[in-house]
Length: 175
Length: 175
DNA sequence: TATTGTTATACTCTATAACTATA
DNA sequence: TATAGTTATAGAGTATAACAATA
Image (cartoon, rainbow over the protein chains, first blue to last red):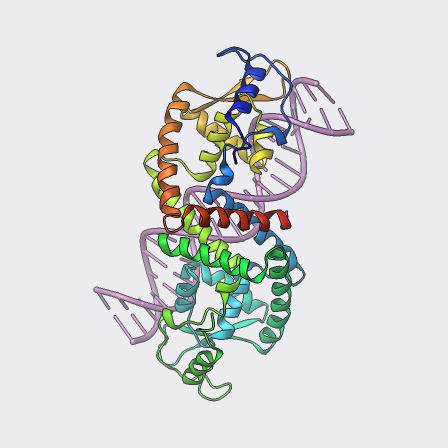
């Protein structure tokens, strides 16, 4: 981090602007010369960039089956908790119930999941995968594992555990 | 992670659905009982949750000055690189130049930054903070430091370095 | 009264195409 | 031709309010 010195910023400023307040033209710096102002020391910046890179890879990896991260998480949680309701699912994954409606409509349209009227509480729907959904989920899971391996390929098992544990501590301390 | 057993999922399934294919009603499980299917072992899930928690805290902390994460990053990069162009700024922060237009309009409206016509290349604008922008940025920076301290309060210096380094390796290996 | 699922709506972020003025 | 800035637009993701049915 000390590689980015205020000195180099001052130099660019001088080169570009000449004396104070004068904005005479100068050749534009290449992107690589831009001083990112220690943004790489900001946890928010680094975590955000990592999240974007990881989601991009996930989306690309599962593009052949047209499944996005939120859809994948919904499907595996339904698979592990057959019969759970939309409200429960939303609370578990921090998805507003209003926003689950469209997702579940889409998963039903694709015959991956279904809503079953619950006789016990007729306000709620019990959620289940279809047989086809269970079958497809195996394919999704295989692709997700492929993605996971690529995203963590430069980490050994201990490093991955450390990374997840540190992030979990950050989340718990803020949540 | 081994605390979440497939056994408990099977138990819920049995309790809820009775025999295979029958969906007799049962009291809905509480959200805490939902099996998250080892989502906490998925780097994407954990990083996404951390990013949401961190951004939420950043936005709340800087709400009094009405500055969002992307605005803050734009302001500190302009401060460190006075005279850089919109294209350079966008490349440095991975913001599409079309999406920078609105942000810079807003920052100009608030008299924090300004576009200066470049005589050298009349297509481009040299970006600068206003004196008021430089003054306000000190306040923004103080609040951002407060946020950073809160987000990392459970990590010591070595742990924070480790976390940022591991995330950086993930980004580099995917990017 | 409170909760479930739904509709409608709005706001942010992100992405692309096309235009203009310059180079 | 290529680039800088802009406009228009569209798609996700996320948030709230209000409603009908039900508890």
